[in-house]
Length: 266
Image (cartoon, helix red, strand yellow):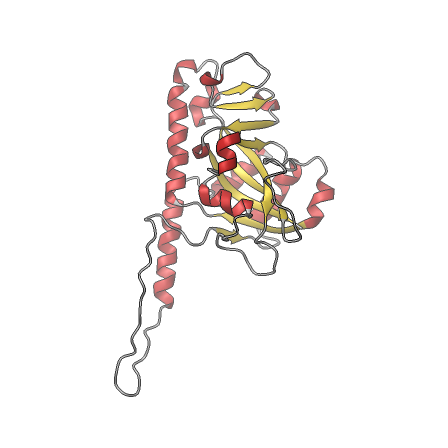
């Protein structure tokens, strides 16, 4: 599973480089200019007025946040294999796959993620014998965030964030995991693709609510076992288990998590 994830991360521009997002924004601008057609003048000889209303967005604003991966897409196939490998009962869940979305992260989210990685690496330097992996890449891990999605019900392709306050996926992607729930409880990530990361009281119910799994890159840093005696002040994240046997992580900094793909189930 790890080898598949490395291949996917390097070949689908899953936020591995800041230039990936910069290039994608430039491509969108070129595409818009290529298809923009100058409106013809009216027969009366008066030019047709094109009223442009100014839109105020942030410098790194991206309207399109999702790319839907079609059935048979190589990236989708790998995402399905990764989530299936992290499931105890893959045959039970994978017959109900509704959509697979690739997340487009804005530049500021990517910059915060990489800055956090460097901060963790520097803070771990003095303890390199205890945490050798942390110095190399911040102890990056593949993790899953189980939640729900409400705007993925129809056949229309999903590309933008919805405005439904009950849509957990869109609110998480919009805030970069910095939701009120995560601020209070921490960001719980799982090694299993079946576990929920949020309390059942937070997740809304209804016919339009679909279970969703967010595939994430997480900078775990120095992990302290919840059952251990180590101080939380000397770690970057809390874990249940140790090293390769960690079942879930609890991260306190939203900059430590980067959403890459979303799988939505019926």
